[in-house]
Amino acid sequence: MQGAGSEATPKILAECRNYDELICAFRARVHALEGVCEDIDDVAGLPTGYATKLLARIPARNFGRLSLGLMLTVLGLKLAVMTDGEVLLRRKNARHVMPAEGKPRKLLPSTMWTSEGGRRARALQLLLLSPAQRRASARKAARARWSRNGHIATRTEGGSPTS
Image 1 (tube, rainbow, N blue to C red):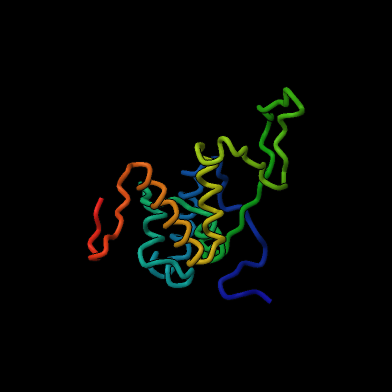
Image 2: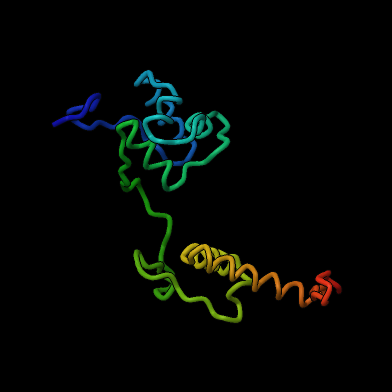
């Protein structure tokens, strides 16, 4: 059973080879449906004005994992990946082939938090902790920072902190 406003047979509305062309295709689809960005926000569950920021001529926001899927769903679109002429990339060395799927590689402990990837890994690790565990980790880090600088405040018998 077809939903309201759906088309019987899919047809190619636009060909996009870069991000700007994709945004133009979204704008054309909204125009063809005589839609309003506020309606898109409501139906997709996006914050008010978010679709306007995504579809602006100079976008204030970029599509992410969530917003791209929501926009495609609301506008009744889907993306298809197809070959387009000659392949420019040639494999030079077999051991540098990127796996299609799999586990992310482990970071070495010596460089774990010094690289951008290490900081992202730590951020993801913190998201998996409970709020109480995050607070404990933050307290421990704060104590370590303050102790390195020699600024640990200790309480005296009177209750006032001294350096």
